[in-house]
Image (cartoon, rainbow, N blue to C red; front, side, top):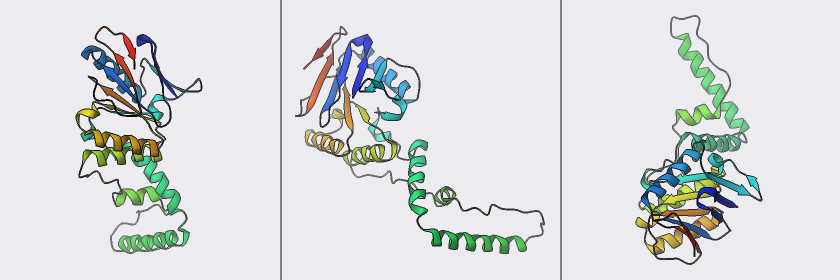
Length: 223
């Protein structure tokens, strides 16, 4: 998998069990690049291309950007839709239970309607898992004891539910200790996620990192 940006002559060759770190020393360049990535994750235009074997991938589908790790939302529309689809697929195996629930709900509705003075009430006889999940507010717990735990679970959700291939984190090394960063890498490798770290300054190098630096003059340095 490759992530390229022609403006800065940047070509990041993403490889399994490797982490790519992009150090942006110039604040204006960092602002420009992060804004570009943000727009592209929303389906907008930008200067980056994500590809596999020469085939361009849809950025908004396969690339996730984390600017504020404390504000990640496990229950945004995209994730919840994927979660409900998976739950409904499993739920469809419980045919007998589904029929029993639907019959009881219809009976309850009929009893309620019989006790009001309206003759033109109607309701849907079809059983829909998604409506049940919404009724009982099924969601992913967003409370964690530590930031590392939260990031690992978020990576798992993005990988297994949303088919995300690349997770980009901005200045994550400012919030996690070296041993926590190593654990984060380990779990990203386990879930087959390519990690891209964007840092405003070069931090202590950790085994398994490929380092790309765009200096204050906009020149690319590869370590």
